[in-house]
Image 1 (cartoon, helix red, strand yellow):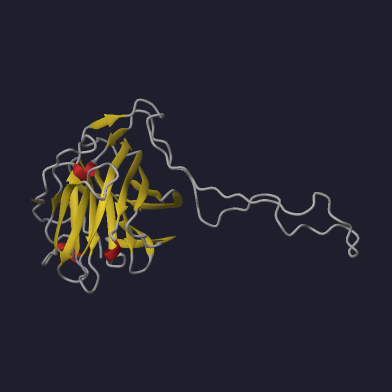
Image 2 (image 1 turned 60 degrees about the vertical axis):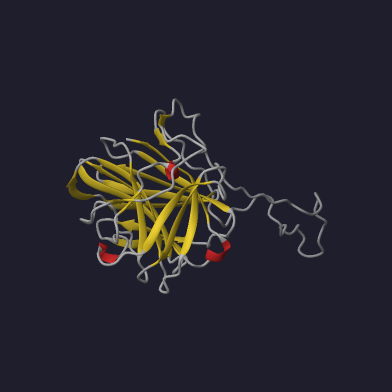
Length: 308
């Protein structure tokens, strides 16, 4: 399912009916980091190895020189990519607790291929106490509709005048056990309009191909990244962080980090000239499979950190 993105189709936005947020675990205010110390970083995985055997090799009968130990004396390179998420620049804007902000919207059937036709039945319930990490998560759900259609949610944020030089989009996600294999895909994005260009930064956890893909807004197609998708284990929280930036009219998908493991991708796209005015949004989408299997996911600690 293609992510049909807000602003690309001429479809009227409808406000989502959500539960009133009471007793939230955090505020919705925008904050500025005063220094590079005011950020949270993911700790990379590490690997270690040990050397076994005697410290002095015994003299072998043949050959006449000691054989090379079969156990390496230095740690091996991990087979799974690991790394740290870059630290944001001083003065970066932090928009937190997005999952509980008022103003989430949908654009009807725009989650369908081509952005037209009947849309699925979907919505979001906010201020969910359990399961949650902060004490107030949001439940995104989709109950059915045309096969391979999608439920698309987006929210507007205060704009920045220039393309982002740093953008981190992160959240925690929980999938109930009964929905382990129900998704066709789970998608998320940030989108900025600046200087008449649309900069779109989107990822897709594609269950159909068990791979991570990124969206090319100019060609309107999902593209492979070479990063395999390990389907999310259920009834537990997973932390996802996507890193992006722009340079001129170029869009850079820098990396994706899943549960502390960072996968650099360094994929570049051309921003699309649309002539649109300043805008900044982030979005979340659930896609139905060929059987229109309903499912739900819980999202917590949704945060954008950005600087232009």
